[in-house]
Amino acid sequence: MQIRPEALEKHLSQSLLPVYMISGDETLIVEEACTAIIETAKKQGYSERKILDVGTGFDWSALFVIAGTGSLFAEREMIDLRIPANKFDKGTSTALRSYLEDLPADVLLLIRTQRLDGRQKSNAWYKSIDKMGGIVTVWPVDAAQLPRWIASRARILNMQLDRDAIGFLANRNEGNLLALHQELDKLKLWAGSATITLADVQRSVTDSAHFDAFEVVNAALQGRGKRVIRILHTLEHEGIAPLAVLGAFKRQIDAVSHGSKTRLPREAQQSIDAAKRRLSSAQLQHFTAEASLLDQQVKGMLTGDVWISLERLLLQVAGFKTTPDLNDTQDYLRN
Image (cartoon, rainbow, N blue to C red; front, side):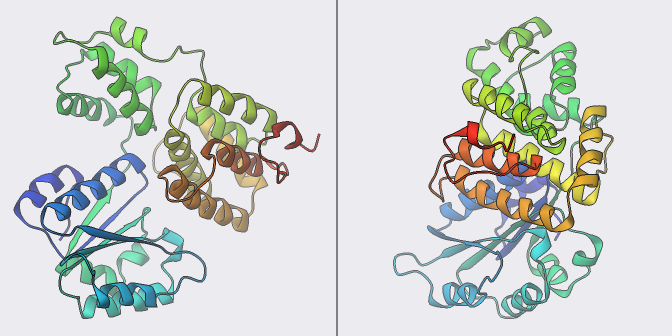
């Protein structure tokens, strides 16, 4: 069954299906939907969760081993299966069909991926999930929908913003729900019961002269390595969450690879056009795979300094060679 993101909470309060797929490019909403399913499953006895990341050379037998053996410590088990959209090949299709044809008892399968195309949605495994499980498709929040999204999110946080405050936030953070989420959280920390005004928001948010996550990604797409380093260090110093930069990176790289369904700001579109002329399909696939690993690092599943990894990846996108010594950023540039 198809489930709208905003209807997922009500659905989960009534039933829990054996398989769910969450797909889309809005990282924040995808993560929140997955978290809602995971938390609901835990309350219903699915106390153990195994994470499987599908990459090059992935052995699909791992899925069936986990599903077949169950847990030694819990009666019910979750499998958190993370599949990049470009990894739905013949092997993936065959494995998913086989799993869905004989669903194991007491196992909940959660599949998360990016936006899927029409060909992928016509596959037998997709139709099987639609029939026996739940599919949550997360669509981008465009400029026209953004004020309503902000108002709705504010209500969830027990906040009330006036129209000018909402308009300011929407204009300042178009295309970056992660940044919006952070700014609303900051407002929540000090806001009282009174309606939050434009002046309140302007005092709370980062000064307009500061850099945001999309600026550093656009600099990388334009091939401006020195600017990448300067902006990224500023973002780290200001306490911007690495996930905000990673979310902006994923969105822009996807726009380079597949185009954007929404109208982009002029600078963003120029950066994407420049990257299309400079980067090959193989490079884009490599950067997408690296972003998936970075996502694991952000969430603590891989060790290492996230900011160093972000810097290295962005400089690679900008066309500069990186050195093994990631702490010495001056040696990152060839000239």
